Length: 582
Ligand SMILES: Nc1nc2c(ncn2[C@@H]2O[C@H](COP(=O)(O)O[C@H]3[C@@H](O)[C@H](n4cnc5c(=O)[nH]c(N)nc54)O[C@@H]3COP(=O)(O)O)[C@@H](O)[C@H]2O)c(=O)[nH]1
Image (cartoon, rainbow, N blue to C red; front, top):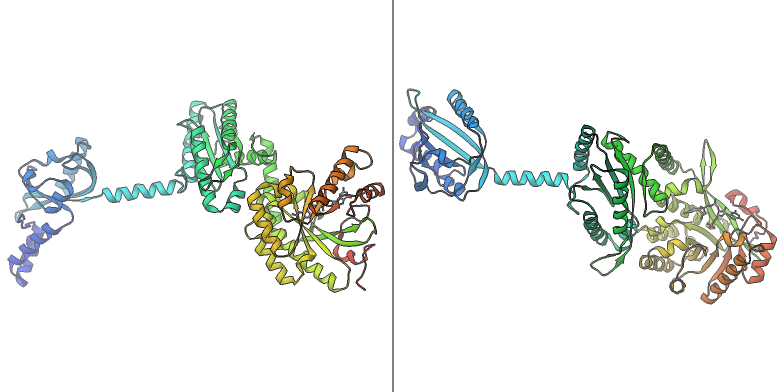
Protein backbone atom coordinates (compact mmCIF):
# COMPACT_ATOMS: atom_id res chain seq x y z
CA UNK A 1 0.00 0.00 0.00
CA UNK A 2 1.30 3.43 -0.89
CA UNK A 3 1.75 5.82 1.95
CA UNK A 4 0.95 9.45 1.25
CA UNK A 5 0.50 12.38 3.57
CA UNK A 6 -1.49 15.37 2.38
CA UNK A 7 0.18 18.69 2.79
CA UNK A 8 -1.92 21.41 1.26
CA UNK A 9 -2.04 24.77 3.04
CA UNK A 10 -5.56 23.96 4.09
CA UNK A 11 -4.59 20.46 5.11
CA UNK A 12 -1.60 21.92 7.01
CA UNK A 13 -3.76 24.49 8.74
CA UNK A 14 -6.18 21.75 9.67
CA UNK A 15 -3.31 19.61 10.84
CA UNK A 16 -1.98 22.45 13.00
CA UNK A 17 -5.41 23.07 14.45
CA UNK A 18 -5.78 19.38 14.94
CA UNK A 19 -2.38 19.17 16.59
CA UNK A 20 -3.84 21.09 19.51
CA UNK A 21 -6.33 18.31 19.95
CA UNK A 22 -4.65 15.18 18.47
CA UNK A 23 -1.12 14.05 17.61
CA UNK A 24 0.03 14.88 14.01
CA UNK A 25 0.65 11.18 13.39
CA UNK A 26 -3.07 10.54 13.73
CA UNK A 27 -3.89 13.17 11.09
CA UNK A 28 -1.34 11.64 8.73
CA UNK A 29 -2.81 8.20 9.30
CA UNK A 30 -6.27 9.57 8.57
CA UNK A 31 -5.04 11.17 5.34
CA UNK A 32 -3.52 7.83 4.35
CA UNK A 33 -6.76 6.05 5.09
CA UNK A 34 -8.73 8.55 2.97
CA UNK A 35 -6.23 8.16 0.13
CA UNK A 36 -6.27 4.39 0.25
CA UNK A 37 -9.95 3.81 0.88
CA UNK A 38 -11.39 6.39 -1.51
CA UNK A 39 -13.64 5.01 -4.26
CA UNK A 40 -12.37 7.76 -6.54
CA UNK A 41 -9.13 7.33 -8.46
CA UNK A 42 -6.56 9.71 -6.99
CA UNK A 43 -3.36 10.63 -8.81
CA UNK A 44 -0.71 12.88 -7.29
CA UNK A 45 1.75 14.50 -9.64
CA UNK A 46 4.62 16.93 -9.28
CA UNK A 47 4.41 20.32 -10.89
CA UNK A 48 5.68 18.84 -14.19
CA UNK A 49 2.81 16.38 -14.32
CA UNK A 50 4.93 13.33 -13.43
CA UNK A 51 2.96 10.81 -11.40
CA UNK A 52 4.16 10.46 -7.82
CA UNK A 53 1.44 8.35 -6.32
CA UNK A 54 -1.85 6.70 -7.19
CA UNK A 55 -4.36 5.08 -4.86
CA UNK A 56 -5.87 1.57 -5.14
CA UNK A 57 -9.09 2.94 -6.69
CA UNK A 58 -6.98 4.33 -9.56
CA UNK A 59 -5.74 0.81 -10.28
CA UNK A 60 -9.27 -0.61 -10.10
CA UNK A 61 -10.68 2.02 -12.45
CA UNK A 62 -7.85 2.45 -14.94
CA UNK A 63 -6.33 -1.02 -14.85
CA UNK A 64 -2.81 0.40 -14.31
CA UNK A 65 -0.85 -0.66 -11.23
CA UNK A 66 1.04 1.98 -9.26
CA UNK A 67 4.35 0.62 -10.55
CA UNK A 68 3.21 1.07 -14.15
CA UNK A 69 2.41 4.75 -13.81
CA UNK A 70 4.55 6.22 -11.08
CA UNK A 71 7.32 8.20 -12.76
CA UNK A 72 5.36 8.56 -16.02
CA UNK A 73 3.87 11.76 -17.33
CA UNK A 74 0.13 12.17 -16.90
CA UNK A 75 0.01 13.01 -20.59
CA UNK A 76 0.64 9.37 -21.44
CA UNK A 77 -2.67 8.52 -19.72
CA UNK A 78 -4.77 10.98 -21.71
CA UNK A 79 -7.62 9.62 -23.85
CA UNK A 80 -6.74 11.60 -26.95
CA UNK A 81 -10.36 12.74 -27.19
CA UNK A 82 -9.74 16.32 -26.10
CA UNK A 83 -8.09 19.06 -28.08
CA UNK A 84 -5.09 20.96 -26.77
CA UNK A 85 -7.22 24.01 -26.16
CA UNK A 86 -9.28 22.00 -23.70
CA UNK A 87 -6.19 21.27 -21.53
CA UNK A 88 -4.95 24.84 -21.94
CA UNK A 89 -8.19 26.19 -20.50
CA UNK A 90 -8.21 23.55 -17.78
CA UNK A 91 -4.70 24.46 -16.54
CA UNK A 92 -5.42 28.15 -16.80
CA UNK A 93 -8.39 27.63 -14.49
CA UNK A 94 -6.25 25.64 -12.04
CA UNK A 95 -3.62 28.39 -12.09
CA UNK A 96 -6.17 31.07 -11.37
CA UNK A 97 -8.53 29.31 -8.95
CA UNK A 98 -6.45 26.47 -7.56
CA UNK A 99 -8.77 23.77 -8.94
CA UNK A 100 -10.76 22.62 -11.98
CA UNK A 101 -13.76 20.35 -12.04
CA UNK A 102 -15.56 18.89 -15.01
CA UNK A 103 -16.31 15.88 -17.17
CA UNK A 104 -13.43 14.38 -19.07
CA UNK A 105 -12.72 11.33 -21.21
CA UNK A 106 -10.13 8.99 -19.67
CA UNK A 107 -8.46 5.91 -21.09
CA UNK A 108 -8.16 2.57 -19.33
CA UNK A 109 -5.12 0.32 -19.69
CA UNK A 110 -7.11 -1.87 -22.10
CA UNK A 111 -7.57 1.13 -24.38
CA UNK A 112 -11.24 1.69 -23.59
CA UNK A 113 -12.29 5.29 -23.23
CA UNK A 114 -14.64 6.13 -20.35
CA UNK A 115 -16.31 9.29 -19.03
CA UNK A 116 -15.12 10.58 -15.66
CA UNK A 117 -15.68 13.51 -13.35
CA UNK A 118 -12.25 15.04 -12.65
CA UNK A 119 -11.43 17.34 -9.77
CA UNK A 120 -7.93 18.71 -10.21
CA UNK A 121 -6.42 20.71 -7.34
CA UNK A 122 -3.08 22.32 -6.82
CA UNK A 123 -1.28 21.75 -3.53
CA UNK A 124 0.71 24.66 -2.14
CA UNK A 125 3.34 24.77 0.58
CA UNK A 126 3.42 27.20 3.52
CA UNK A 127 4.83 29.87 1.19
CA UNK A 128 2.00 29.49 -1.27
CA UNK A 129 4.20 27.77 -3.86
CA UNK A 130 2.57 25.00 -5.91
CA UNK A 131 4.27 21.74 -5.03
CA UNK A 132 1.89 19.08 -6.38
CA UNK A 133 -1.31 18.48 -8.23
CA UNK A 134 -3.97 16.07 -7.07
CA UNK A 135 -6.39 14.65 -9.57
CA UNK A 136 -9.40 12.82 -8.24
CA UNK A 137 -11.67 11.11 -10.77
CA UNK A 138 -15.01 9.36 -10.38
CA UNK A 139 -15.88 6.84 -13.10
CA UNK A 140 -19.12 8.05 -14.75
CA UNK A 141 -19.58 5.08 -17.12
CA UNK A 142 -22.40 3.55 -15.11
CA UNK A 143 -24.18 6.85 -14.57
CA UNK A 144 -23.81 7.70 -18.27
CA UNK A 145 -25.11 4.26 -19.22
CA UNK A 146 -28.13 4.72 -16.95
CA UNK A 147 -28.66 8.17 -18.42
CA UNK A 148 -28.60 6.69 -21.91
CA UNK A 149 -30.97 3.92 -20.86
CA UNK A 150 -33.30 6.45 -19.29
CA UNK A 151 -33.13 8.60 -22.39
CA UNK A 152 -33.88 5.58 -24.58
CA UNK A 153 -36.80 4.57 -22.35
CA UNK A 154 -38.20 8.10 -22.46
CA UNK A 155 -38.14 8.14 -26.26
CA UNK A 156 -38.99 4.57 -27.20
CA UNK A 157 -41.90 2.25 -26.81
CA UNK A 158 -41.26 -0.64 -24.43
CA UNK A 159 -43.20 -3.29 -26.32
CA UNK A 160 -41.93 -2.77 -29.86
CA UNK A 161 -38.70 -0.84 -29.26
CA UNK A 162 -39.90 1.75 -31.80
CA UNK A 163 -39.52 5.52 -31.31
CA UNK A 164 -42.48 6.83 -29.34
CA UNK A 165 -44.67 9.85 -29.94
CA UNK A 166 -42.16 12.27 -28.35
CA UNK A 167 -39.24 11.16 -30.48
CA UNK A 168 -41.48 11.08 -33.55
CA UNK A 169 -42.36 14.74 -33.04
CA UNK A 170 -38.65 15.62 -32.76
CA UNK A 171 -37.90 13.77 -36.02
CA UNK A 172 -40.95 15.22 -37.72
CA UNK A 173 -39.93 18.77 -36.75
CA UNK A 174 -36.47 18.21 -38.21
CA UNK A 175 -37.86 16.58 -41.35
CA UNK A 176 -40.18 19.56 -41.82
CA UNK A 177 -37.27 22.00 -41.64
CA UNK A 178 -35.26 19.93 -44.11
CA UNK A 179 -38.22 19.72 -46.52
CA UNK A 180 -38.75 23.49 -46.43
CA UNK A 181 -35.01 24.15 -46.85
CA UNK A 182 -34.60 21.69 -49.71
CA UNK A 183 -37.96 22.37 -51.37
CA UNK A 184 -38.72 18.64 -51.03
CA UNK A 185 -41.92 16.77 -50.17
CA UNK A 186 -42.43 14.41 -47.24
CA UNK A 187 -45.36 12.30 -46.07
CA UNK A 188 -46.85 11.19 -42.78
CA UNK A 189 -48.63 7.83 -42.91
CA UNK A 190 -50.99 7.29 -39.98
CA UNK A 191 -51.54 3.54 -39.72
CA UNK A 192 -54.27 1.89 -37.66
CA UNK A 193 -54.49 -1.88 -37.45
CA UNK A 194 -57.95 -3.11 -38.42
CA UNK A 195 -59.66 -5.46 -35.99
CA UNK A 196 -56.80 -5.30 -33.50
CA UNK A 197 -59.13 -4.48 -30.61
CA UNK A 198 -61.09 -7.58 -31.42
CA UNK A 199 -57.98 -9.73 -30.96
CA UNK A 200 -57.08 -7.92 -27.75
CA UNK A 201 -60.58 -8.24 -26.32
CA UNK A 202 -61.14 -11.83 -27.36
CA UNK A 203 -57.70 -13.49 -27.04
CA UNK A 204 -56.32 -11.32 -24.27
CA UNK A 205 -53.60 -8.71 -23.95
CA UNK A 206 -50.75 -11.22 -24.24
CA UNK A 207 -51.94 -12.18 -27.72
CA UNK A 208 -52.50 -8.49 -28.52
CA UNK A 209 -48.92 -7.63 -27.51
CA UNK A 210 -47.52 -10.47 -29.60
CA UNK A 211 -49.56 -9.31 -32.57
CA UNK A 212 -48.18 -5.78 -32.18
CA UNK A 213 -44.61 -7.12 -32.20
CA UNK A 214 -45.28 -9.21 -35.31
CA UNK A 215 -46.99 -6.26 -37.01
CA UNK A 216 -44.00 -4.05 -36.16
CA UNK A 217 -41.66 -6.55 -37.82
CA UNK A 218 -43.81 -6.58 -40.97
CA UNK A 219 -43.94 -2.80 -41.01
CA UNK A 220 -40.16 -2.58 -40.73
CA UNK A 221 -39.78 -5.06 -43.57
CA UNK A 222 -42.09 -2.95 -45.73
CA UNK A 223 -40.01 0.22 -45.37
CA UNK A 224 -36.64 1.54 -46.45
CA UNK A 225 -33.97 1.78 -43.78
CA UNK A 226 -34.14 5.59 -43.70
CA UNK A 227 -37.95 5.76 -43.33
CA UNK A 228 -38.92 6.41 -39.73
CA UNK A 229 -41.39 4.04 -38.09
CA UNK A 230 -42.85 5.06 -34.72
CA UNK A 231 -45.56 3.71 -32.44
CA UNK A 232 -48.07 6.43 -31.78
CA UNK A 233 -50.00 4.48 -29.17
CA UNK A 234 -52.25 1.39 -28.97
CA UNK A 235 -52.50 -0.09 -32.43
CA UNK A 236 -51.47 3.13 -34.18
CA UNK A 237 -48.18 3.55 -36.00
CA UNK A 238 -46.68 6.44 -37.93
CA UNK A 239 -44.37 6.22 -40.90
CA UNK A 240 -42.39 9.30 -41.85
CA UNK A 241 -41.25 9.37 -45.47
CA UNK A 242 -38.84 12.04 -46.65
CA UNK A 243 -38.09 12.96 -50.25
CA UNK A 244 -41.25 11.34 -51.52
CA UNK A 245 -44.18 12.10 -53.84
CA UNK A 246 -47.93 11.37 -53.72
CA UNK A 247 -47.32 8.34 -55.99
CA UNK A 248 -44.42 7.11 -53.85
CA UNK A 249 -46.36 7.48 -50.58
CA UNK A 250 -49.35 5.68 -52.16
CA UNK A 251 -47.14 2.77 -53.19
CA UNK A 252 -45.68 2.49 -49.67
CA UNK A 253 -49.17 2.67 -48.10
CA UNK A 254 -50.52 -0.06 -50.38
CA UNK A 255 -47.49 -2.25 -49.71
CA UNK A 256 -47.96 -1.83 -45.94
CA UNK A 257 -51.66 -2.74 -46.25
CA UNK A 258 -50.85 -5.80 -48.36
CA UNK A 259 -48.24 -7.03 -45.87
CA UNK A 260 -50.53 -6.49 -42.87
CA UNK A 261 -53.42 -8.23 -44.60
CA UNK A 262 -51.44 -11.48 -44.79
CA UNK A 263 -52.36 -13.81 -41.89
CA UNK A 264 -50.40 -13.66 -38.62
CA UNK A 265 -49.59 -16.84 -36.76
CA UNK A 266 -49.51 -16.30 -33.01
CA UNK A 267 -47.23 -18.52 -30.85
CA UNK A 268 -50.30 -20.25 -29.35
CA UNK A 269 -51.22 -21.39 -32.87
CA UNK A 270 -54.05 -18.97 -33.67
CA UNK A 271 -54.15 -17.66 -37.22
CA UNK A 272 -55.20 -14.02 -37.14
CA UNK A 273 -56.35 -11.77 -39.97
CA UNK A 274 -56.19 -8.05 -39.32
CA UNK A 275 -55.26 -5.60 -42.09
CA UNK A 276 -54.65 -1.88 -41.80
CA UNK A 277 -56.16 1.46 -42.71
CA UNK A 278 -53.91 4.42 -43.50
CA UNK A 279 -54.33 8.18 -43.65
CA UNK A 280 -51.69 10.25 -45.45
CA UNK A 281 -50.77 13.91 -45.16
CA UNK A 282 -47.97 15.64 -47.07
CA UNK A 283 -45.52 18.23 -45.84
CA UNK A 284 -44.96 21.05 -46.14
CA UNK A 285 -48.02 21.30 -48.48
CA UNK A 286 -50.69 20.30 -45.92
CA UNK A 287 -48.97 22.01 -43.01
CA UNK A 288 -45.55 22.93 -41.72
CA UNK A 289 -46.48 22.04 -38.14
CA UNK A 290 -45.95 18.54 -36.80
CA UNK A 291 -49.14 18.42 -34.70
CA UNK A 292 -51.29 19.64 -37.59
CA UNK A 293 -49.78 17.13 -40.01
CA UNK A 294 -50.61 14.32 -37.62
CA UNK A 295 -54.16 15.63 -37.19
CA UNK A 296 -54.59 15.78 -40.96
CA UNK A 297 -53.27 12.26 -41.42
CA UNK A 298 -55.67 11.14 -38.66
CA UNK A 299 -58.61 12.78 -40.45
CA UNK A 300 -57.63 10.93 -43.64
CA UNK A 301 -57.33 7.71 -41.63
CA UNK A 302 -60.89 8.17 -40.41
CA UNK A 303 -61.99 8.40 -44.05
CA UNK A 304 -60.07 5.24 -44.89
CA UNK A 305 -61.82 3.39 -42.06
CA UNK A 306 -65.22 4.71 -43.05
CA UNK A 307 -64.54 3.57 -46.62
CA UNK A 308 -64.49 -0.02 -45.41
CA UNK A 309 -60.97 -0.41 -43.95
CA UNK A 310 -57.86 -2.02 -45.46
CA UNK A 311 -57.43 0.99 -47.69
CA UNK A 312 -55.69 4.37 -47.59
CA UNK A 313 -56.88 7.92 -48.05
CA UNK A 314 -55.01 11.16 -48.65
CA UNK A 315 -55.80 14.28 -46.63
CA UNK A 316 -57.66 17.11 -48.31
CA UNK A 317 -58.78 20.31 -46.61
CA UNK A 318 -62.47 19.21 -46.68
CA UNK A 319 -61.51 16.42 -44.30
CA UNK A 320 -60.77 18.90 -41.53
CA UNK A 321 -64.42 19.88 -41.51
CA UNK A 322 -65.46 16.20 -41.35
CA UNK A 323 -63.04 15.51 -38.49
CA UNK A 324 -64.25 18.56 -36.61
CA UNK A 325 -67.84 17.44 -36.95
CA UNK A 326 -66.87 14.03 -35.61
CA UNK A 327 -65.03 15.55 -32.65
CA UNK A 328 -67.95 17.82 -31.89
CA UNK A 329 -70.35 14.90 -32.10
CA UNK A 330 -68.16 12.87 -29.73
CA UNK A 331 -68.20 15.68 -27.16
CA UNK A 332 -71.96 16.08 -27.56
CA UNK A 333 -72.52 12.34 -27.09
CA UNK A 334 -70.49 12.37 -23.88
CA UNK A 335 -72.55 15.24 -22.56
CA UNK A 336 -75.78 13.53 -23.64
CA UNK A 337 -74.76 10.43 -21.73
CA UNK A 338 -74.04 12.48 -18.60
CA UNK A 339 -77.37 14.29 -18.95
CA UNK A 340 -79.29 11.09 -19.62
CA UNK A 341 -80.61 12.31 -22.98
CA UNK A 342 -80.83 8.86 -24.60
CA UNK A 343 -84.30 7.37 -24.59
CA UNK A 344 -85.89 4.22 -25.94
CA UNK A 345 -88.81 3.94 -28.30
CA UNK A 346 -90.53 0.60 -28.71
CA UNK A 347 -91.72 -1.11 -31.89
CA UNK A 348 -94.21 -3.96 -31.44
CA UNK A 349 -93.33 -7.52 -32.42
CA UNK A 350 -96.50 -9.04 -33.83
CA UNK A 351 -97.95 -12.48 -34.53
CA UNK A 352 -98.59 -12.45 -38.30
CA UNK A 353 -101.48 -14.86 -37.94
CA UNK A 354 -103.40 -13.29 -35.04
CA UNK A 355 -102.09 -9.69 -35.08
CA UNK A 356 -101.37 -9.94 -31.33
CA UNK A 357 -98.45 -7.87 -30.01
CA UNK A 358 -96.33 -10.36 -28.07
CA UNK A 359 -93.19 -8.33 -27.62
CA UNK A 360 -91.31 -5.10 -28.30
CA UNK A 361 -88.04 -4.08 -29.86
CA UNK A 362 -86.30 -1.29 -27.93
CA UNK A 363 -84.82 1.32 -30.31
CA UNK A 364 -82.61 4.12 -29.11
CA UNK A 365 -83.24 7.82 -29.79
CA UNK A 366 -81.31 10.88 -28.69
CA UNK A 367 -83.61 13.48 -27.19
CA UNK A 368 -81.48 16.58 -27.73
CA UNK A 369 -82.92 19.63 -25.91
CA UNK A 370 -82.24 21.89 -28.91
CA UNK A 371 -82.42 19.66 -31.97
CA UNK A 372 -85.22 17.36 -30.82
CA UNK A 373 -85.33 13.63 -31.45
CA UNK A 374 -82.25 12.34 -33.27
CA UNK A 375 -82.31 9.03 -35.12
CA UNK A 376 -79.71 6.36 -34.22
CA UNK A 377 -78.34 6.35 -37.78
CA UNK A 378 -77.09 9.90 -37.12
CA UNK A 379 -75.11 9.19 -33.96
CA UNK A 380 -74.51 5.45 -33.56
CA UNK A 381 -71.57 5.31 -36.01
CA UNK A 382 -69.64 7.90 -33.94
CA UNK A 383 -70.69 6.21 -30.69
CA UNK A 384 -69.39 2.91 -32.06
CA UNK A 385 -66.18 4.40 -33.41
CA UNK A 386 -65.35 6.15 -30.13
CA UNK A 387 -66.39 3.27 -27.87
CA UNK A 388 -69.11 5.41 -26.27
CA UNK A 389 -71.60 2.81 -27.44
CA UNK A 390 -70.48 0.58 -24.56
CA UNK A 391 -71.74 2.83 -21.72
CA UNK A 392 -74.67 4.06 -23.84
CA UNK A 393 -75.70 0.51 -24.80
CA UNK A 394 -75.38 -0.77 -21.26
CA UNK A 395 -77.54 2.10 -19.99
CA UNK A 396 -80.21 1.31 -22.63
CA UNK A 397 -80.13 -2.36 -21.74
CA UNK A 398 -80.89 -1.48 -18.14
CA UNK A 399 -83.68 0.96 -19.11
CA UNK A 400 -85.30 -1.67 -21.37
CA UNK A 401 -85.10 -4.38 -18.71
CA UNK A 402 -86.51 -2.11 -15.98
CA UNK A 403 -89.31 -0.90 -18.29
CA UNK A 404 -90.24 -4.48 -19.24
CA UNK A 405 -90.34 -5.47 -15.58
CA UNK A 406 -92.70 -2.55 -14.90
CA UNK A 407 -95.02 -3.28 -17.83
CA UNK A 408 -95.25 -6.94 -16.88
CA UNK A 409 -95.98 -5.91 -13.33
CA UNK A 410 -98.76 -3.60 -14.55
CA UNK A 411 -100.39 -6.51 -16.39
CA UNK A 412 -99.36 -5.97 -20.04
CA UNK A 413 -99.25 -9.27 -21.92
CA UNK A 414 -95.66 -8.89 -23.14
CA UNK A 415 -93.45 -11.97 -23.46
CA UNK A 416 -90.36 -10.49 -25.06
CA UNK A 417 -88.21 -7.37 -24.95
CA UNK A 418 -85.66 -7.34 -27.81
CA UNK A 419 -82.61 -5.08 -27.41
CA UNK A 420 -80.00 -4.32 -30.07
CA UNK A 421 -76.40 -4.99 -29.09
CA UNK A 422 -73.68 -3.20 -31.05
CA UNK A 423 -70.55 -5.02 -32.26
CA UNK A 424 -68.32 -3.17 -29.84
CA UNK A 425 -70.66 -3.70 -26.92
CA UNK A 426 -70.85 -7.41 -27.72
CA UNK A 427 -67.06 -7.74 -27.84
CA UNK A 428 -66.49 -5.81 -24.66
CA UNK A 429 -64.89 -8.07 -22.07
CA UNK A 430 -67.37 -7.13 -19.37
CA UNK A 431 -70.51 -7.48 -21.45
CA UNK A 432 -71.83 -10.71 -19.91
CA UNK A 433 -70.95 -9.46 -16.40
CA UNK A 434 -72.80 -6.23 -17.07
CA UNK A 435 -75.85 -8.05 -18.30
CA UNK A 436 -75.83 -10.28 -15.22
CA UNK A 437 -75.75 -7.15 -13.02
CA UNK A 438 -78.66 -5.62 -14.99
CA UNK A 439 -80.74 -8.76 -14.56
CA UNK A 440 -79.97 -8.80 -10.84
CA UNK A 441 -80.78 -5.12 -10.36
CA UNK A 442 -84.02 -5.08 -12.38
CA UNK A 443 -85.09 -8.60 -11.27
CA UNK A 444 -86.35 -9.28 -14.82
CA UNK A 445 -86.70 -12.97 -15.73
CA UNK A 446 -83.92 -13.55 -18.27
CA UNK A 447 -86.13 -15.46 -20.73
CA UNK A 448 -88.12 -12.23 -21.29
CA UNK A 449 -85.05 -10.52 -22.71
CA UNK A 450 -83.69 -11.19 -26.22
CA UNK A 451 -80.41 -9.74 -27.43
CA UNK A 452 -80.26 -8.88 -31.13
CA UNK A 453 -76.78 -9.35 -32.52
CA UNK A 454 -76.14 -8.77 -36.20
CA UNK A 455 -75.06 -11.61 -38.40
CA UNK A 456 -71.90 -9.68 -39.26
CA UNK A 457 -70.91 -9.32 -35.59
CA UNK A 458 -71.48 -13.01 -34.96
CA UNK A 459 -69.29 -14.02 -37.89
CA UNK A 460 -66.49 -11.62 -37.01
CA UNK A 461 -64.37 -13.60 -34.62
CA UNK A 462 -65.67 -17.08 -34.34
CA UNK A 463 -63.82 -18.36 -31.26
CA UNK A 464 -64.50 -15.23 -29.20
CA UNK A 465 -68.14 -15.11 -30.33
CA UNK A 466 -68.73 -18.66 -29.21
CA UNK A 467 -67.33 -17.91 -25.72
CA UNK A 468 -69.43 -14.75 -25.31
CA UNK A 469 -72.59 -16.40 -26.58
CA UNK A 470 -72.10 -19.30 -24.17
CA UNK A 471 -71.71 -16.83 -21.28
CA UNK A 472 -74.87 -14.95 -22.32
CA UNK A 473 -76.82 -18.14 -22.83
CA UNK A 474 -75.87 -19.37 -19.37
CA UNK A 475 -77.61 -16.28 -17.99
CA UNK A 476 -80.84 -17.52 -19.61
CA UNK A 477 -81.49 -14.69 -22.11
CA UNK A 478 -82.62 -15.29 -25.70
CA UNK A 479 -80.37 -14.58 -28.69
CA UNK A 480 -81.51 -13.38 -32.10
CA UNK A 481 -79.45 -13.08 -35.28
CA UNK A 482 -80.33 -9.60 -36.58
CA UNK A 483 -80.30 -8.54 -40.27
CA UNK A 484 -80.07 -12.19 -41.29
CA UNK A 485 -79.20 -12.75 -44.95
CA UNK A 486 -76.98 -9.67 -45.30
CA UNK A 487 -73.80 -11.26 -43.98
CA UNK A 488 -71.82 -14.26 -45.04
CA UNK A 489 -72.90 -16.80 -42.49
CA UNK A 490 -71.28 -20.15 -42.51
CA UNK A 491 -74.35 -22.32 -42.06
CA UNK A 492 -72.26 -25.08 -40.50
CA UNK A 493 -71.06 -22.56 -37.93
CA UNK A 494 -74.50 -21.05 -37.40
CA UNK A 495 -75.77 -24.51 -36.53
CA UNK A 496 -73.38 -24.69 -33.60
CA UNK A 497 -74.29 -21.30 -32.10
CA UNK A 498 -76.79 -21.18 -29.23
CA UNK A 499 -79.18 -18.78 -31.03
CA UNK A 500 -82.99 -18.81 -30.76
CA UNK A 501 -84.27 -16.57 -33.56
CA UNK A 502 -83.36 -15.49 -37.10
CA UNK A 503 -84.57 -12.02 -38.05
CA UNK A 504 -85.04 -11.77 -41.82
CA UNK A 505 -83.50 -8.51 -43.01
CA UNK A 506 -85.83 -5.76 -44.20
CA UNK A 507 -84.14 -5.62 -47.62
CA UNK A 508 -85.62 -9.02 -48.56
CA UNK A 509 -89.07 -8.25 -47.13
CA UNK A 510 -89.34 -4.96 -49.05
CA UNK A 511 -89.29 -6.70 -52.42
CA UNK A 512 -91.71 -9.49 -51.57
CA UNK A 513 -94.44 -9.72 -54.23
CA UNK A 514 -92.23 -7.87 -56.75
CA UNK A 515 -88.95 -9.73 -56.91
CA UNK A 516 -89.05 -13.55 -57.17
CA UNK A 517 -85.41 -13.71 -55.99
CA UNK A 518 -86.32 -12.04 -52.66
CA UNK A 519 -89.23 -14.44 -52.25
CA UNK A 520 -86.88 -17.37 -52.88
CA UNK A 521 -84.38 -16.05 -50.32
CA UNK A 522 -87.08 -15.47 -47.70
CA UNK A 523 -88.46 -18.98 -48.24
CA UNK A 524 -84.95 -20.43 -47.97
CA UNK A 525 -84.31 -18.56 -44.69
CA UNK A 526 -87.60 -19.82 -43.25
CA UNK A 527 -86.72 -23.40 -44.21
CA UNK A 528 -83.23 -22.99 -42.80
CA UNK A 529 -84.65 -21.75 -39.49
CA UNK A 530 -86.97 -24.76 -39.37
CA UNK A 531 -84.05 -27.13 -39.99
CA UNK A 532 -81.96 -25.47 -37.29
CA UNK A 533 -84.89 -25.45 -34.85
CA UNK A 534 -84.91 -21.64 -34.70
CA UNK A 535 -87.79 -19.17 -34.62
CA UNK A 536 -88.00 -16.73 -37.52
CA UNK A 537 -89.20 -13.12 -37.49
CA UNK A 538 -89.47 -10.78 -40.50
CA UNK A 539 -88.40 -7.13 -40.23
CA UNK A 540 -89.75 -4.16 -42.14
CA UNK A 541 -93.23 -5.38 -43.07
CA UNK A 542 -94.97 -2.41 -44.64
CA UNK A 543 -97.80 -3.94 -46.70
CA UNK A 544 -100.53 -6.49 -46.22
CA UNK A 545 -99.19 -8.38 -49.28
CA UNK A 546 -95.79 -8.79 -47.61
CA UNK A 547 -97.49 -10.01 -44.44
CA UNK A 548 -99.56 -12.55 -46.37
CA UNK A 549 -96.62 -13.93 -48.33
CA UNK A 550 -94.58 -14.30 -45.16
CA UNK A 551 -97.38 -16.03 -43.27
CA UNK A 552 -98.05 -18.34 -46.23
CA UNK A 553 -94.32 -19.21 -46.38
CA UNK A 554 -94.31 -20.23 -42.71
CA UNK A 555 -93.02 -17.06 -41.01
CA UNK A 556 -95.40 -16.26 -38.17
CA UNK A 557 -93.72 -13.32 -36.45
CA UNK A 558 -92.88 -9.89 -37.75
CA UNK A 559 -92.56 -6.16 -37.19
CA UNK A 560 -92.90 -3.15 -39.41
CA UNK A 561 -94.71 0.06 -40.19
CA UNK A 562 -97.77 -1.98 -41.25
CA UNK A 563 -98.38 -2.60 -37.54
CA UNK A 564 -96.73 0.36 -35.88
CA UNK A 565 -93.65 2.51 -35.90
CA UNK A 566 -91.51 2.66 -32.77
CA UNK A 567 -93.38 4.67 -30.11
CA UNK A 568 -92.30 6.36 -26.88
CA UNK A 569 -92.76 4.36 -23.67
CA UNK A 570 -95.91 6.17 -22.57
CA UNK A 571 -97.72 5.11 -25.80
CA UNK A 572 -96.92 1.41 -25.43
CA UNK A 573 -99.90 0.47 -23.17
CA UNK A 574 -102.34 1.72 -25.82
CA UNK A 575 -100.74 -0.09 -28.80
CA UNK A 576 -103.41 -1.90 -30.84
CA UNK A 577 -103.05 -5.68 -30.48
CA UNK A 578 -101.41 -5.48 -27.06
CA UNK A 579 -103.46 -7.37 -24.51
CA UNK A 580 -103.50 -7.63 -20.76
CA UNK A 581 -102.88 -10.68 -18.66
CA UNK A 582 -106.31 -11.93 -17.56
N1 LIG B 1 -76.63 -0.94 -30.66
C1 LIG B 1 -77.84 -0.43 -30.76
N2 LIG B 1 -78.37 -0.22 -31.99
C2 LIG B 1 -79.59 0.29 -32.06
C3 LIG B 1 -80.32 0.63 -30.92
N3 LIG B 1 -81.50 1.15 -31.33
C4 LIG B 1 -81.49 1.14 -32.66
N4 LIG B 1 -80.36 0.62 -33.11
C5 LIG B 1 -79.98 0.41 -34.48
O1 LIG B 1 -80.08 1.58 -35.21
C6 LIG B 1 -80.51 1.31 -36.52
C7 LIG B 1 -81.62 2.21 -36.93
O2 LIG B 1 -82.69 2.06 -36.01
P1 LIG B 1 -84.06 2.81 -36.20
O3 LIG B 1 -83.84 4.09 -36.91
O4 LIG B 1 -84.73 2.79 -34.89
O5 LIG B 1 -84.82 1.88 -37.20
C8 LIG B 1 -85.45 0.69 -36.73
C9 LIG B 1 -86.89 0.69 -37.13
O6 LIG B 1 -87.49 1.93 -36.95
C10 LIG B 1 -86.78 0.32 -38.58
N5 LIG B 1 -88.01 -0.27 -39.08
C11 LIG B 1 -88.85 -1.08 -38.43
N6 LIG B 1 -89.87 -1.40 -39.24
C12 LIG B 1 -89.69 -0.77 -40.41
C13 LIG B 1 -90.39 -0.74 -41.64
O7 LIG B 1 -91.45 -1.33 -41.81
N7 LIG B 1 -89.85 0.02 -42.64
C14 LIG B 1 -88.70 0.70 -42.47
N8 LIG B 1 -88.27 1.42 -43.50
N9 LIG B 1 -88.01 0.68 -41.33
C15 LIG B 1 -88.47 -0.06 -40.31
O8 LIG B 1 -85.75 -0.67 -38.59
C16 LIG B 1 -84.86 -0.44 -37.52
C17 LIG B 1 -84.77 -1.69 -36.68
O9 LIG B 1 -83.86 -2.50 -37.29
P2 LIG B 1 -83.35 -3.81 -36.59
O10 LIG B 1 -82.53 -3.40 -35.41
O11 LIG B 1 -82.51 -4.46 -37.63
O12 LIG B 1 -84.53 -4.60 -36.16
C18 LIG B 1 -80.91 -0.13 -36.58
O13 LIG B 1 -79.94 -0.88 -37.25
C19 LIG B 1 -80.95 -0.54 -35.16
O14 LIG B 1 -80.49 -1.88 -35.02
C20 LIG B 1 -79.74 0.38 -29.63
O15 LIG B 1 -80.33 0.62 -28.57
N10 LIG B 1 -78.51 -0.15 -29.62
